[in-house]
Amino acid sequence: MTPGKLLIITAPSGAGKTTIVRHLLQQFPQLEFSVSATTRPKREYEEDGKDYFFLSEAAFREKVAAGDFAEWEEVYAGRMYGTLRSEMERIWDKGHCIVFDIDVLGAMNLQRQFPKTSMSLFIAPPSIEALRQRLEARGTETTASLETRLERAEMEMAQSGGFHHVLVNDQLEQACNTAGELVGKFLADEL
Image (cartoon, rainbow, N blue to C red):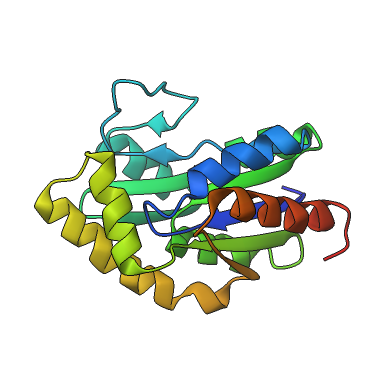
């Protein structure tokens, strides 16, 4: 696999990375989203192969054993996420830059594997309390899952210094604009 460029965007859950990724995909036609594989259940509005490749835990583990993943993590107990090498090759074969919307540990792993061809962007919430409010507003979390996500967010935020750029998302429009400026420079080989 001859690596092309990788744009690695990571953040604690609820920090706004998916919204920023969507903005970047609209702004730069040479970017293409890498669809991750996961063992988590599909939400009613999600499509297999578009939002995620939804796999059973057994199928996921078979792919791990076969070396089919460039990276993978068990992010939460029984919830695994990974990047299929075939997905990366598909995007690079088109001459596109891969965009990852990925958890912090997976992002660190990709950055280590592709240090010369990647740019990483850590999206940080203004505070843990702001993150709590965003996650509560989603209405998708139980009290227990909210606390689990917040504990993980603290660990993830402690890792933010290991990424190329840290962007605090306190004003979404400004965060999108700043991300666009950074990505434009990266694609033009100015970073």
